Length: 500
Ligand SMILES: Cc1cc2nc3c(=O)[nH]c(=O)nc-3n(C[C@H](O)[C@H](O)[C@H](O)COP(=O)(O)OP(=O)(O)OC[C@H]3O[C@@H](n4cnc5c(N)ncnc54)[C@H](O)[C@@H]3O)c2cc1C
Image (cartoon, rainbow, N blue to C red):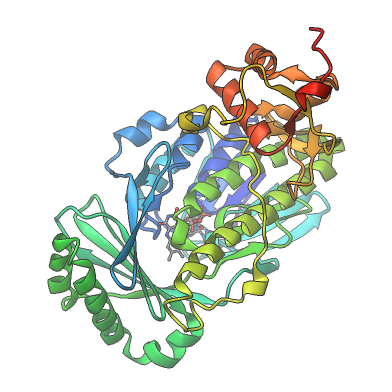
């Protein structure tokens, strides 16, 4: 029985980090937004280790203090254990990562959305969606055994791996599963990744005196060797791995004792993929519905926030500046595709490190699938993250003469500018697979385009950059340009005299 009919500009399906953040931003841009979620909140969710980039997004949202005040662990490094006692430390650059209960973190973001004026409908499950007209969706939603119709102009799929609105995805890896368990634990321990022949174990202490253990394996291996004896397999393999780990982290012995008492092991999909049609007419996929990263990097939530902040700007552009529709759509699809490729390259490099130790399919991943993508400057790079030790390239002095590389080409590309996607200057250069406009939020393409084609002393370029940005950032940008060969040193004997 249909009991209600409601109209919104935008409906967001899913109140996880992506849905809450996107909804809050769109409401702030002046749209009437409703978020629905099939569950009650606060709700438990996997993925408690958040990468350092989370701080930048929380700052954008004005939630830094709220996050600082939450119950959490600060995480400066992760230990990666390879066979033969080889331990690698992954130090987290700049700000630390955090470990936090997702029920707390996700609820913080959801409350932020509600405070912004977003309408919230919990325990409302999207059953289906249909287009009433070219510009209007009709959603059928189930709430307490009754269906409701909700109408909206834009539909945002933030339903995570459920991908409630469907659409096609490209898988980046073979199907991977994760066996998850939580054990009581009241000691200190460093989060770890431990490789074994058929996968890897990820472990971390949580702020509520529990320890999260996640065992990642190929789905085909799971079906053949684990499915019928899940608990036994988990206890046996994890027991052996923990015995080894306890040699350097004795506190982990407590987990070994608790392994026998495990009550529940959940099996969840952990395959990485991306949506090949992340945006279409009046429908956009955000967060894990658009892009699922390999959990190795602990950056799923950070990426979910990035896609949702960008998606809010894309949808705002489409609603308020329809002449930029194609630009905004291309921008978003490229963000998803490029992020997936860059991340996959990073993950492939990790698996390649395990390949010499283990001859199994899990570690011997197809090298031909590797896509080499040179790292682009991040628009969101924060001055706090700049490595001050790399401010002075060795061979450059204040008097070194520099010229713009003749290999630079200028084009127009789409970029986030405030609340809209606009066309901006961008640089193409053979060192990069993709055009780019910004370095650390600085509009480098426009700067270089306006710079006359003549040689400048490094000190003069630094002074020019310092007019537009703070000195540390000016130094960073100058060095980045030199290191990436966008500025090249001029043979002094042939250099024209600077006339400035
Ligand atoms: C094994 C594993 C480990 C991970 N570990 C980490 C980690 O350590 N760190 C990290 O950053 N990331 C991790 N991730 C990824 C991380 O969990 C996700 O990136 C993140 O939760 C994505 O947020 P989201 O808002 O897109 O989706 P979600 O947080 O999944 O939220 C989706 C919401 O949609 C709702 N929903 C679904 N279907 C419907 C429907 N039909 N109608 C209404 N509502 C619906 C759900 O109830 C849910 O609340 C891990 C992922 C896996 C699989």
